Amino acid sequence: MEVATIVIGYLGYALVRLAVKASHTSAFAHAAQLWRAERATHLDIEPSLNHLAAAHPALAEAAGYYYGLLNFTITPLVLAWLYLRRPAAFGPLRSALVLSTTAANLVFWTWPAAPPRFAVPGMTDVLDRYHILGAGDPHGPDGLVNLYAAMPSLHVAWAAWCAAAVVIATRGRWRHLAWLYPAATTFVVLASANHFVLDVAAGLAVMALGLLAAGVTPVAICCRAHALARPAQQHTARASIPRSSSDGYGHQRAEQDKRAESDVVAEPGPAQSQQSDGEQRGGHEAGERAGHQRAPAQPAERGADAGGQFPVAGTDAGRADEEHDQVDGREPGSGQDGPPELTGVVRGQSRGG
Image (cartoon, rainbow, N blue to C red; front, side, top):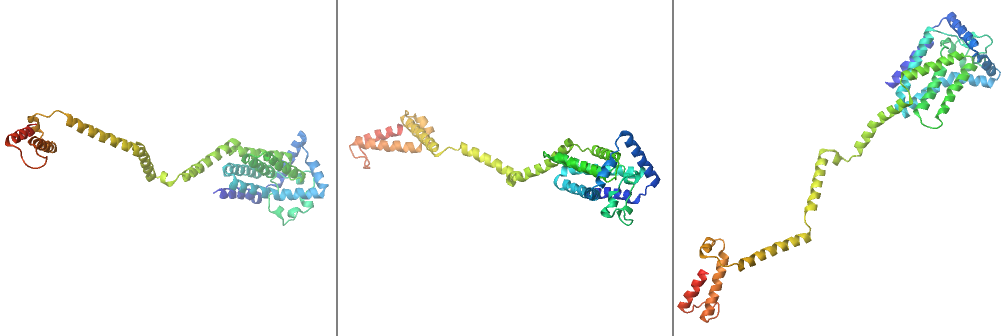
């Protein structure tokens, strides 16, 4: 989509430059108006710069090749750099370039103007004199383009756009040196007699309007950069979360781990367990001693609790037998009974108490 937008904008520019045939009369009339306005305001510096270039062949040829090549080389390179390295700034700056070029095409179509090398007497056409890039050849590029598309200067407009793109899209301390490019372009278009000073001013104005219409400001570019970077940061944050904690299973596992930790904290250690067991055994022994030291229960109570205290009753009966043997004068556990009268007394005592 981005490439298609740029291609459409350039095709529109080429269509006007190649297909639209401006009127020779109107183009020279408009050029005469511009020249008179510059002389009235003392802006007519084109003859001085043109004579300087024409007097030095090396300077004239450098200006000619600069004019014919750099404008169509640097601008696409800056576009590619923005697209690849500064995506946040690419959209607004691309829109500004397309808008300004479209506005310039409308002026070319409706208000053609001849360049000074054609309209001002005494000016030297350095492109034609040194045959730079086939200039002056009837079958060269001059026969394929609109020679009366001088107002506004797109060379200066595009150079200013390149400088603005570098200044806005970068933060280096030397970025403002990019303004030397439109300054050098201004010198070249005036020295080669391809544009008037007013053409240069109109080119800068058209580009400024395009930048404003596209909302290209340093603040807007920074906001757009943050907006583009936020989804990438969120994606990076999600990617850094382990899968075991990013899904439902991981959440449940984390909850189980927390509960296990709380159980470990609440579970007593070995020393505490031994102490608790000792306390429990001590409590049972104390209870048993207290039970033995209690007073004997009444017969009615014994009868009621006979089912629950069967082992204790057996023990009491054994003790009674031993007492019976001792009273009878025999060895305990011999199995022989004593006198009947004593045996009955002892057994009655054992049963009663």
